Each structure stands twice: as C-alpha cells, then as structure tokens.
Image 1 (cartoon, helix red, strand yellow):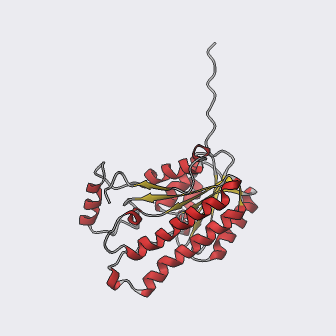
Image 2: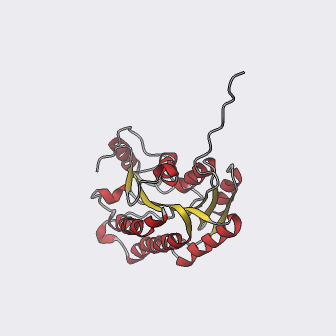
Image 3: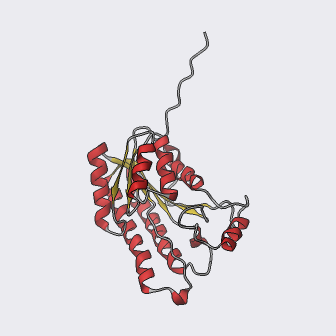
Length: 250
C-alpha cells in the first residue's frame, strides 16, 4: 500500500496577526493571505465597517475587525488589547494603514501635510506598541511606497511621510533583534486599488509601461511578499526595504 501523503503545515499556523487598514485594497489582500497561511487575524479600519466585516466572514480562520483611528497612538494599544483578549497574544503587526495624496510642492497645503504625517505618527506608535508586546520571534512589516526611491513630481509630502517610517523600521530592527523580532518594509509600485483608481488614465498607462510586465501591480502581488516576510522563512531578513514594483524603473 502506498505511503499516505502528509499535509504540509501552513507557514503561519498558530500565529496571530494585526493588519491595520485591512478592510480594502492591499490590506485586505494581506489579511486574506495570512489567514490562508493559518494566522488568526485582527483587522483595523477607519470607515469601511461593512467591508471589514464581510472580509472577516470570508476568511478561513478566526478573524474579527475593530474601528480604529490609525493616526492616534491609543489605537495601537486598543488593537493589541483586543487581539490579546481574543487570541491570547500577538505575533505579527502589519502596519498597512495609510492615505494617498499627491500635489505639487508649491500647492501642498498644511492640512494635506498634517493628514499624511498624522498617519506617520500613528505608525510610529503602532510599531512602538509592537516592540514591547509581540511574542518572541515576532514580525513587524510596514507598507511604504516606491516613491521613496525616485524623484517623482507631486510626491514630496507623501513620499516624505513614508520615508520616515522606513527609518523607524531600520532603527527598531536593531532594538528588537535580541528577541528574534524582525522589522521590514515593503515598497510597492503603483497597485490597482481604490486609492489609485482615481489616477488619470495616461498616468496609469505610463506606470504600467515602466514595469517589466507591462501592467500595474495587484494587491496579491504585495500580499505574497508580506506573507513571506511574516513567516519563519524570513527569520534572517530584518531592517530591509523590499521593493516590489514589477521592475519599474525609478
């Protein structure tokens, strides 16, 4: 009689992940992928309650969502408290929450600048919360932007707000390394999401033409990279900026 095949354990079986801004777009794709890899999931959202609840109901594992303002330091404590109460602890933080805003340098308003950097502040304190509350061997993965690697017009404030988070990750990786915690950033190119759907067609076509594959990125393209960084296979990768842009030239 033939030897019975043994099911391969899922890479995140028994892990608990918080995905900020996880109701739509890249965040939703990340939540789906981590759940399929075996993780229990807490999603935070700011406005998309229906989408968050529908996503959680569709996931194969245990998942729930809470409303949280990603600009407020207290929201990180709220998320970690809720996940710990439900699941007993947290292993992974995916700092995905963000807003997109492009404008010429000369016409960038103070309100726009403050809105972008309010998310940066919230991300700092989410990472701070994770640094003390993730279990040994935990993972912190943030979502930045490929705009930090080039000199695109109209992107100064947005790219600047993301570049700051990249520096948070580099420094933090040195501080939490002794506990086996890794900290990395993923830098997507232009991805098909609600945030980019309002881009002019000419701009979208130009962005697609710059890639090696002649298309824009998809949320799953980014989610797969994040899932790898969240797994034990990435245990020797930390403090890194992983560019995931389909070969798009700067």
